[in-house]
Amino acid sequence: MAQIIDGKAIAARLRERVAAETAVFREETGVTPHLAAVLAGEDPASAVYVRNKQRACEKAGLRSTSHRLEDGASQEELLALVERLNADADVHGILVQLPLPEQIDETAVLDAVSPLKDVDCFHPENVGLLSQGRPRFQPCTPAGCQHLLTEAGVSTEGAHVVVLGRSEIVGKPMAMLMLQKGEGANATVTVCHSRSRDLAAITRQADILIAALGKPRFVTGEMVKPGVVVIDVGINRTDDGKLVGDVDFASVTTKASAITPVPGGVGPMTIAMLLQNTLTAARLQVNGSSPAPEQRASGSTGRRSPPGG
Ligand code: GUN
Image (cartoon, rainbow, N blue to C red; front, side, top):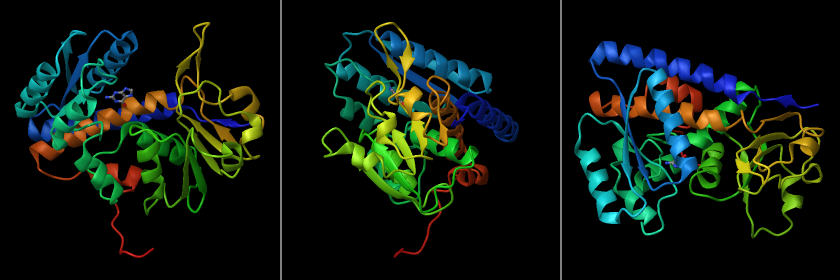
């Protein structure tokens, strides 16, 4: 039977570490890191996610404020709000919860967030820095997956990591993180998606499989090789109201060496990484400094190496 990777416990430890670092930062600077969460529209799931993120901030000693716009809000209203938050020296991190109402151009809004306050790591400047191996912020969900692997003692060095899904939020930045030089990365990475031919032939080659395609129980036992480590990013609600991942836990767990559950796997890690990024944003704006050494050590993707390898 597979080892169950306990994301709840691992995230709790990370949140405690951020809380301790935040307390030191506040003592040294007199500043409390402040996350502004923007919620546009009435999507009930988004409202729950934002509330959970704000609660986690407060428990870790960070300040959080929420900024709500109704469903019919215009793009101009949302851009004006983002500009106001960009200009507010008291706000260190800005999170615009997705999805946005359909009349709003998501790219235009995400591009408008100041790159120094972009705690989701969605701004093209931050995506570029990440892809060059010198991240300013860690993309929350992918960095959470990487942290789970590290904490579970899974070596990624030279491993074949197959990422299933090519979204801007998870699949693409996940592949970028695992490809970097350094500890917790150095992997051989394949990205596959809904248009890939013979998906199962690719997923069966994975030493580590990261499923992030948003299809309930898509990955079955026949699609993985014995001993695989499986990270399930999916959060899908079935018709009977149950939360399930992108992985068919029952059949995959009999073959895997380690697997994350849903819920209690990747989900809590995303929030913990958001807290970490909010502290990083406050440090950048108050001290003008890069992240503390502890953060670099956790992801190690920031290490520069000579070209060529
Ligand atoms: N919606 C679903 N996941 C995310 C996320 O990681 N960040 C934001 N801003 N919105 C989301």
